[in-house]
Amino acid sequence: MKALKVHLASASTRRFELLNEVLKGLNVEFSASPLVSSEIIPPIGINVGSQVEKILASKINSAIAEFTLRLESENEIPHFILVADTLVEDPDDINIAMGQPVDRNGAAAMLLRLSGRRHNVWSGTALLYRKESIWVVETEVEHATVEIDELSSEALSTLLESDSWVGKAGAYDLAGAIGVHARLVAGTKECVLGFAPTIITNLIDHTIAKS
Image (cartoon, rainbow, N blue to C red; front, top):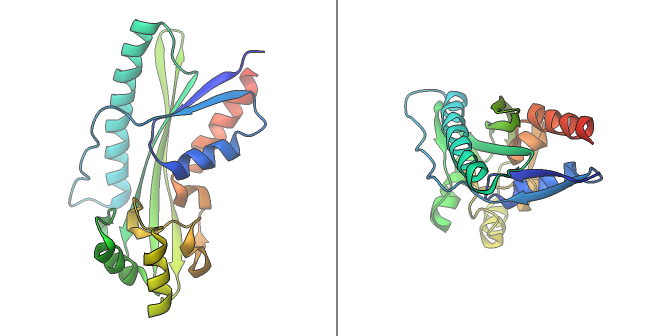
């Protein structure tokens, strides 16, 4: 049987690796590339979970527009399309999302803010596919709680020198160098790494059903 095509509309290498891992053994062809449209700036004054919902809604609209055009021009699109967004919640304010550090000093400031504390990570994911001539969209926003050890000056220096903070919200990657200093308190690793687990389960179920 011809392989099902699954496309990840994201430039995240960590999401790419995770999705490759969970789809291993299934009859799929996997591709990834970011959406053409620019991401919206998270709104201010609402909790981080709601911020993720609004950003995800914008990405869904962009994905539908982009892949509808592709369908009209090429008469072919992937069987399943995933869009996702992840924000790290400031440990002191549920209405503030910690973005990606722009430099080493910014990364140090973020890591020191998270040091010795717990915080929430919110991931929203949408699964898009066509049913006859209609777009079907399944969405979910979930969160996990991460605890980071009190970081010594040596540990902080090692993390900064590793460059594992580059391009990472909150300046860390749970599957990277900070792993020895951090642990899940609630939720799943998949949520911290960039996906709402419920949608990934749905994708696997749909893929198996179509195989």
